[in-house]
Image (tube, rainbow, N blue to C red; front, top):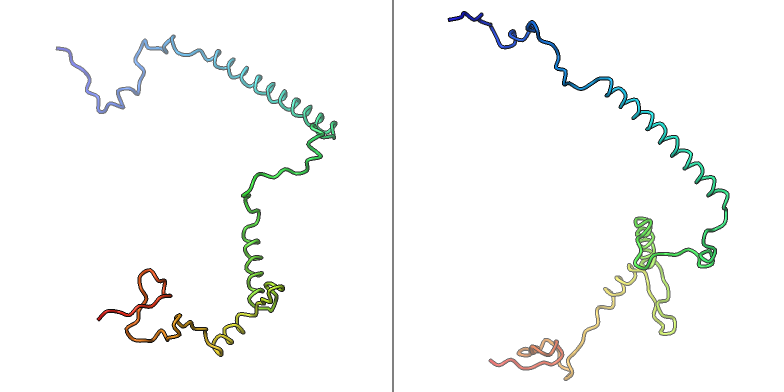
Length: 166
């Protein structure tokens, strides 16, 4: 039986390189990696310089030709997408709409001049309604709606009155 040295921990076992051991010859060659990175950097610089030149030429060409590419399209004017279109400034348009509605409620004006229909401020309209009262409708027979025993039928929409059966 051979006697093995007892090692305190697994980490201490690998602190020293055993004699006769070297690196593996099948590992990656550093020189090949360096050459690859060099040519990668050179090609990246060439590509970026080439793209810069192409963009410069395209910008020059666009500035040289000041006329429209399609001259017939100039006569058509600005083309808009079909309705409904998105609002550019919805909050501004909503504020303008509310201000217009508020001014309509606060002033006098014609709704239909030919028919003689006007609008008045809402405060005045409410005051006049309270003073004059709401118009009431009487049934066709001239009787009041308060007549006991009369009630509207299901299909009458409140117009025809019939006596309830008791």
